[in-house]
Image (cartoon, rainbow, N blue to C red):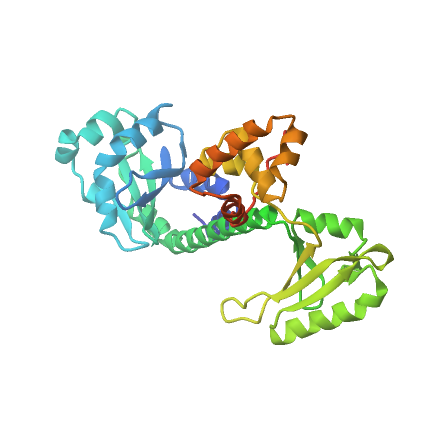
Length: 373
């Protein structure tokens, strides 16, 4: 492979860290360069069967991958050899498995040879956190074993594969962490608005988006968070500057149209990461009189309440009296009292105050909307 083609292949290796689905393009380029009939990229974790992250080639039957994952991956003798390699070291199977071994091996005789494959070049591309990435490049017997030139090319690519796989792992971990954070942001009753140290918008949850879109309390002016009430703007600007400078939380009252009290805004400075400067600020906006309670579905799932019992328990936690609830639900008071006794028994409480305290301590989640978000 000439230098220009090698450099282009290295570039594709790093691009695959951002788009793991493109590993196929990387290895198809290598397939054309050194003559492969099949390739795979495996993730091997201690105590678990190997996971196939990517595979391709012009040979093997449609059921080859399923057969490998269900049985033959567990008896693949090449994986055991790869565990003894250092990261980046290339394994050539002809150096470890001669024809005598192959003739007696279940893996070779019942799986690999019938699939049209024989020779392997590969090795441990990346290791860490209990996961090992193993690269396998395969040929049929008709092509013959890998040459020394093939080995040198693969060896030159291994450091790039390692770095790209590490970046891919880190990006996937950060993506999972961000997904969990987004779920938490959407489940809270607060409007959450993230800004940088100058007040420019960075991110917000759906409640925050709605608040800014209404622009009755808070709004954006040239991309910077501002109060809709001009009389409050100086206080908000000073609070952002103070919180960004010393990290102390700041809480401000918020007013809506005609100066009516709306709620409060609390500013928190996000912690610094990796020894760098402190991150931006979080604005937590709570409206007056808005108190979220665990949903009927939550109460049913947590305590195995019936729908009727869960609706009653939630109403009580929201301050409703039994008589009013019975009347609004068109139920006899005796029926409601029976439901309440059942709710007491299932939740381990004995009186209404205990039930209210129990439900008040459950973090509420948003009920899914029919047909999506």
